Image (tube, rainbow, N blue to C red):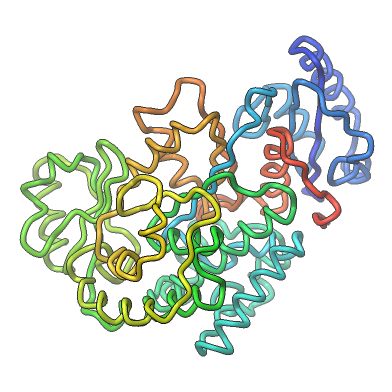
Length: 440
């Protein structure tokens, strides 16, 4: 039987003492039953935690799981951090495509700051833009609602048992403001908990969420832009996007006519965008030539010439909005380097962002030039951090990733993942305010 999640922390001045303390904790856990484990505090007692040179954390819902993970030093669940690792937190904001119903429900329960920020976004979207996103994200069916169970839906169940909901949550007009709100709220909550970002990078709609967190636009004008952008895109002819395991040079012959390069995710990971028929034909040609490809869960051809008709209407809207220089370093998805003040305050930049190719491969290169970056993924799963870790410029020892939300194919409970993430951030130097975390 799975009980409440618990975060276990260890500190020690040397590796030898840390290993000895870990072994002792394993022995203690092996002698606990579920009741004894549930009596452990859910979060560290900050009055008793003494920061030393090394920190180790693990989150688990049973003493058996905790003991097994610690005994094996499971790198997917057990995180060890030294002083040199406590450097730059880089928040990564995802685009649309990987969202699913119930996403964030566990965080909504456990983190009042997240709940408050998400409610604020949803209330503004409902009052100002007639968008009711709560039932889209958190379905009213209590028997299947992860807000009650605190776990992400099993991936296949999310895809097959909720076919109608899955179609709705992938509609451009709903998906874009939803992903903006979810990631904006999570970033603001992490800041309130004591782990603000040192830098930000966003992918497609994620760049607008990152810009909102960086102060380029206040929340209300940012939501006005996001909803207008999504509605304009929904009015365009349908399109498709295709992820291809190949570099842009290999795809030059395919990115022609109505098909264009939409994203450069890595040296050998590219996205094509265009009309549905043209993308389907291109997919057949790629497969015939031995190139792996996959249709993305989107209804329109983002970051392609098909989006250019929206430039004028978006620029006219942006002319009325208060654009400001970013208060934090923010990577541009258009140039792949740090957003300049003249770009951040230019209506033309944001109006054209939707029709320009995403250069995440260059964003990742800039991230790895930072001192000891800690990648904090705000979207579901580890999509962007996974791409960054595959970048050839990644230093050999740099593999620090904080995952905050389960991917659609993960069944890991959100409270446990939350404690894992906060434990990693704490071990990397963040002064977490554990009083704001209400894990059951």
